[in-house]
Image (cartoon, rainbow, N blue to C red; front, side, top):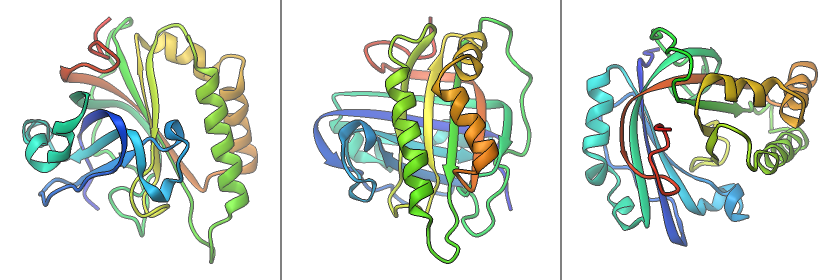
Amino acid sequence: MKKATHVSLVLAQFDSMRETGEVLEHSYLQLLAGADVRASATDAKSQRAFRFVVFGLHESQTSAEDAVDRRMELTPWIAEAAEAWAGVFAPFRHFGEANFLDPQEPGSLYESLVPEPPAGTPIVVITSAGWTPNPVYDMDRIMDFGAGVTGIRVGMTAVPGLHSQQTFSFPGGLDFDGITVTFWREFAAMRDFAYGPGLHREMLRRQKEETLADRSSFTRLSALRSEGTWHGRDPVVW
């Protein structure tokens, strides 16, 4: 299985609820468009939301840059967004498994990692979670995990050092793992939230002890390029 070295992200926010648009044919390792259905109180299968992501995995920075340069061609529906932002990232820490590169055999996503950035550098964190039917999906565990994600999002209001948080599901229901994308002022702010007192630490404990999700991944990334605004400003500049 080929692995990635870089990530491209496009975020788009619309004034009216709509469905996830099409992603045109491409040669990247993966390019998926998904919806933040939790923030829109809609069912994941509907893919109806106000906020969307185009999440790309790439074999090189050149490929990731190309996906950002061609975003209006590959996903022309984002041109209608009230606000949009795009960026290129390099992972500096990654662990766990996800199914974006091979749905049949989930695994690690990245071929290599870049050095950790200096303290005080803004970072982006992408997490994922997924389930395997055996022979069908365990909906009780999935709903339990989803309730935890919703609770964590509510509890992230006014967290110091957090620019924004969003979760996305992809077309096909559970065919692809869902992701969260969070923008942080620096590693220390993310660490204090993730591992300090609160629901997130409790959910980490439950995942370890009860396996609420069959697989999960956690990736910290450095920004190499950023264009546009998200919630009124550049999310990787503080």
